[in-house]
Image (cartoon, rainbow, N blue to C red; front, side, top):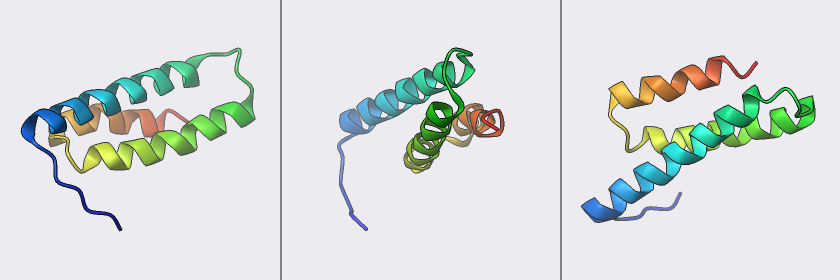
Length: 73
């Protein structure tokens, strides 16, 4: 386990980066042109990014991206 300390500004930037990355992955998961193995790889990565986001996100925001976990199967 690795511990890190961030300033408020850095936390906001990390929050922004993680949300944007998850948004992009959700768009990719909806793309019918991508093959199943590619979507599975994106899904695995989404779960990792989501867990990172869950550590800093308020519950209301977190629920928005938790829905993405359900729609990936």
